[in-house]
Length: 303
Ligand code: HMG
Ligand code: MG
Image (cartoon, rainbow, N blue to C red; front, side):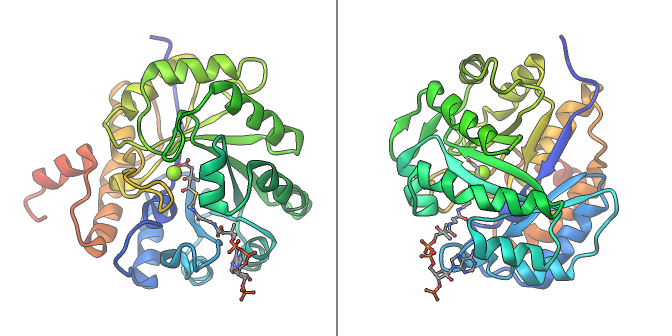
């Protein structure tokens, strides 16, 4: 089946998962959640966002969360950064890597970062330079690779165009975001075809939301193309405040189960992961929808 022997997962639950939660989640709970995730074997955890707190109030405590967590040596702790103010805050607490945001859709860009695509990329340039000069990693997110909540279908040529611009400014680690969860495997084929010669499947990261339960089918197809880095959110927590109706990311437990059952190493201990998810589920006020997570909860008589 041409499958990889291992994949790398970035856990985005503490950021993408929590950013859309309306209930106030105490800082201590977020810290306990990240600390529990650190014990699972995950190598990268997106801990929070240093965005304008008026835009994403839930993550206004990013600085306190970063300062409160226990750092594991083999884990990279990352965060979203939208501008210089965000970079300064991120540097103050010693993030390992920053995530910068742009989009393949003009409307989403303006709703999400209050800027055109061109301005959002222009804004990144000095951030990329400062981060690299300080030894901090840089990731670029391209949202709406398949469709936009405001514009509908997005042309894959536009995704290629944005990826080229990110590579030009020195962003080499690129996460392709299917923001609203409409993706099917033929979309994945179309996108990687369009990216041919610019960004290889091996180089890219795939960030899928799972609104319609199609993410794992796309993961399998993407793995066969050579993709081996994926973003996922524990329990399937999440959504984007600027993508109405979008559900959470592909659930990390589903990805871990799916991969490990096929003999693909994730490095993640599923039981520990379920325990970490329980910590945050207790605070979000509703049951989390990840299938493997739900199945684990049903099998555990104590839960
Ligand atoms: P703005 O309001 O246009 O910024 O926001 P501004 O420069 O005009 O500043 C307004 C005020 O906010 C100023 O304060 C700034 O200091 C303050 P004042 O002078 O009025 O008192 N401010 C900040 N304070 C703290 N930290 C900051 C910061 N920045 C400004 N970083 C901005 C522009 C880009 C900042 C805003 O639009 C923003 O924060 N957007 C982020 C939205 C967001 O987080 N969206 C969700 C994440 S993206 C996503 O989920 C997609 C992804 O998962 C991939 C996928 O699924 O596709 C990544
Ligand atoms: Mg997302």
